Length: 203
Image 1 (tube, helix red, strand yellow):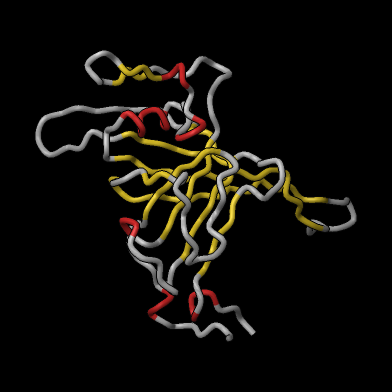
Image 2: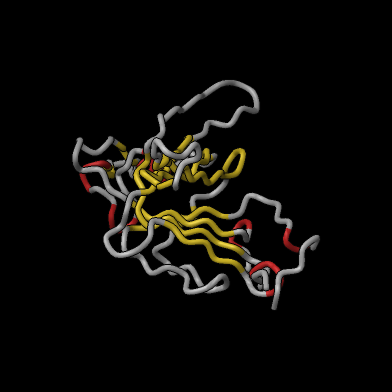
């Protein structure tokens, strides 16, 4: 079905749901496929999330022409940024590059005698890479045919970790910037678009 412009159903709003998983976790197979149990929901955010892809280019020039002959890509970077509003040990370990689920670095946390958890950053060189997922369905509701998704297949948290604690209604957040790396056997990221007009292509 061809894409129909000026359609309100293709204008999306809302923050969606953010997931993290160990490297190699099975991805949803479609815009409505399930997120397997290894994908951990990261909970509330302040300000939602922002996906950014930056491309560095260079021109190929010759003396005999004013305009460049072509433009080539020399580098590309991408990341997903968000501030986690749930101040949990799981989220802090993720923000410290200690991993999640089966990739969690055992030396980064200790369960103490009273049941509390001590969290420490991983030693340099022992940081864990993770997968990051985003789903347009907010709070993990049932998928719809209008859905869209994003998978970042290998990420490293490159942001400056800041934890503020002040009086009043200011939330103590964990600000994260998950930067993409090239995975061994796939593209760094993939978008999924649902059926209907949202996923339709131009003729």
